[in-house]
Length: 586
Image 1 (cartoon, rainbow, N blue to C red):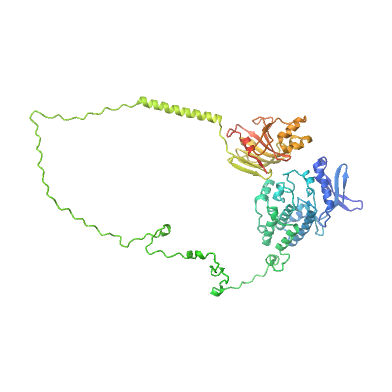
Image 2: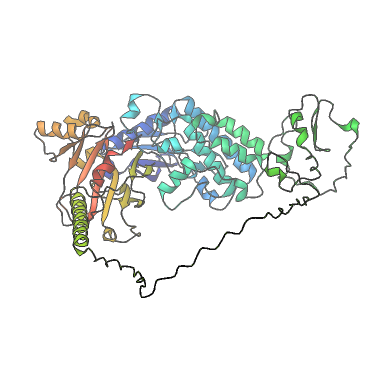
């Protein structure tokens, strides 16, 4: 944004001159931000804020003059390791007083970090670089910062600043607490390979205990940092000096009247080891609590207000009944067994014999001579023949049914290809959007230059994983989601700026109506957002343009859902459009 020169005044004193970078001189937004820093510094006259000595323009480029400090920055000190407690307290108190003064004058710094804290040869700190400061003046700042735009440094920015919320003083307090963590441990609380990973940790991860990185720190410092880096702004300290006082108490640098900070001061001056006395607990009745409650010695609850009195019956289980089975606990009724498992045998009397008359034998048949009956030979049943005709008919019918079902299924598949469900949610903190995608797909957050010249945060979705550095051809279908600046990408003319929040359709229609070139589009509306467009591209890879869907965000940004690569992927129907319809902007 600017270049800082070492310069000499006519009286020979060395000063620092900050000049707007030459390639940004024609950028009206950057120029206004630079000139507003001059206005901010003129109203902030504080012993620990780097003052403004002069300002002006040279060959159309604005500049301003500040004192030249020959010391170093706080970042230079932290690189050497954790700072001692007295320096942490001194630097924090000086910076806190400067921050509270700035907040009283309706200035939010928005970029509190060690490189913006300068230290002179006498150990005095100066808060510098108000280039991205926010003035609580209403409409003025809204013209310089778009809704949802990130301003600041990711490693120190609070969650609400990453979301693009309206800046408040609590955001500077969060950054101050992050800086104290770094001074005490020599490292940042949240680190990661990319800015998106660090931003996500600021959103969701708890504050790590600084004693994990510096065991000499007092335990109460963790409680102060938890409140200072609370995710919700309302849960943090009310002012920077209040945070500084709490920090001094945690470091044991001041003792309260009731001696509450004795334990924390011990880390500065460790006591000599002593042998603790042996204490014999008094378990007599007189030692029981008079007011009732839990007795730590007897491990019993006593007193008239004992809330567990009704459960005393469960303290010791009753003895099992004498003839109970071992499994009585599993049944509602008790089963008892008799000691004598034998029953007396019943006596059955044999029936008395009875006299019955013996019947006379039947007379034997004697065939007359020469006449004998022929034996009866059973007639064999006729052997049934296999019903070939009926079997053939059944087989023909079954084959016809199978063929018809297969034909119907093939026709149905041709007319209705399978729909891949969007069964997984994805939330992007960098884009401030959520959408749904197939759970079996692979997702990756990268920075890509697709529609714009500069790489911007992008979410890549592909049916197969694409290793870093590999070509998109590793997958069959690749979809990208970006949040783009409509003015830069589609060269929206100033006469149509008011149409941008209404959506791409309204904006392109305005450009065409005023005689400007605009893309050929089709309307694309969802249940949540109206005014979107669909720009058809030619596939496969040898294409003239990308298939793009543009959705409005009620600001100057639009959400773009694009097909980057397609290789005969037929696993789903209209997945690109269905994914775009699931987008929700917050």
